[in-house]
Amino acid sequence: MLDPDHPGFRDLAYRARRNAIARLALEYQPGDPVPAVEYTADELEVWRTVWRQLAPLHERTACHAYRQCSLRLPLPGDRVPQLAEINARLGPATGFTMLPVAGLVSARTFLGYLARGIFLSTQYMRHHSRPLYTPEPDVIHELVGHAATLIDPELAQLNRRFGEAMLAADGTSAVRIERVYWFSLEFGVVQEAGGLKAVGAGLLSSFGELERFASQARLLPFDLEAIAAAPYDPTGYQERLFVAPGYHELIESVGRWLLQAG
Image (cartoon, rainbow, N blue to C red; front, top):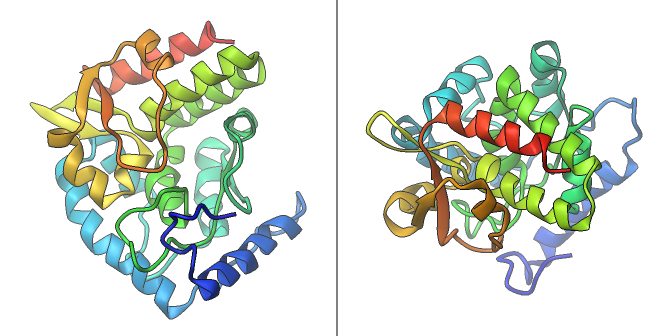
């Protein structure tokens, strides 16, 4: 179900295409081969457009750990890799698997699956009219933002900890955990090499966010209690971000916090 302000809301062909891809996920049964999507020429062009813009930005603004992960799980710039291809690399490295989901699910559901080493991934493409930004997860966000990080044992373990904490959480704690996930693994920022570098998948998969975050977002200290109390809006550019003093400090502090969060 698309919001009325979604760029594809009035595009009936786009909505039909999304529904067809969603059906692949809805029909998927655990243990079956992960369904492949035959992407159209227009969808491939969106992927290539995003890749041309993001690749040089990653060199300047992505944290060192993400760039290293990308070397271990390189994504082709000319086509959309299938989830099965990604899983063939993730499984031996960290035991993670990306499985298809029809659309946005609740934070409790999404994070809960991480405890089992399962990352629920959409497979549809963002609307062609806004290739450099999406108000929701799409296959570019999942693959460019998240897939590479899941090949790193340290980041994979932190994802699992989020899942374990969510499974043990009551309603209030669940909201706090969701917010910490958002401002760390989705929109985390660290100080590195004398500047600000992106850690979170929401930043790393969005040309618009990467272009603006260092100069236009309100940058706050990485205080986990403040983060846990901070609402966020997933439908637009982030107006505030929390900056950790370093990559390892972010990973370690969030991991310790999650042990007490349930």
